[in-house]
Length: 172
Image 1: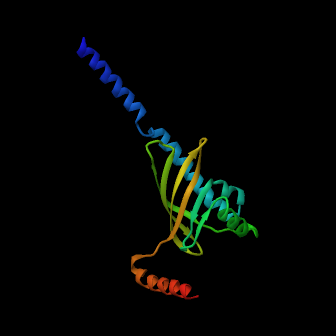
Image 2: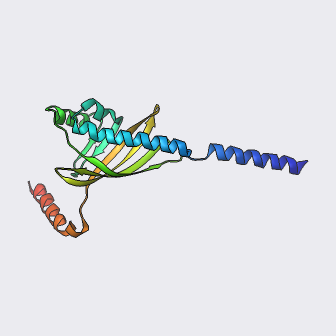
Image 3: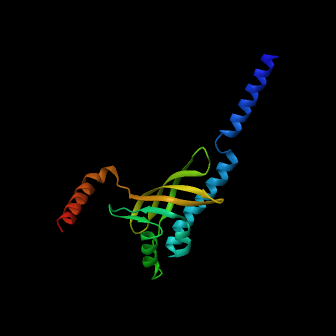
């Protein structure tokens, strides 16, 4: 009787643990991946159209955008909203298109992080990385960071230019 009870308890425990502690199911990952891709593609599209509401609406209420310069940390609702509003005021935004994106999910399925290669016709290749969270069945960007990609073959020259520019800035 005791062995039978122990077996039932073990089966119940395994059943419970597989349901309660399993990560997101494959269909949920597919659906969420599609939603995050739409979110990010929409962000880039709204920037190209200078669509203030759509662009800012892609971020959480306290989302952060990290630009390529060392001082560029734009947070909502203060600095990011003001910068984007001013920049889009004349109907001009910026154009980046994602050419590669990778998305990973936390076990909860409500948080994901991604990296993407984005290309600007004017400025070239960049890497965007970020964290998105699911809020009321909608994915929102909590953190986005953009960095300039530098080919390893060009790094020495770029590093020298960069060091000179930061030294000049410091001396002002």
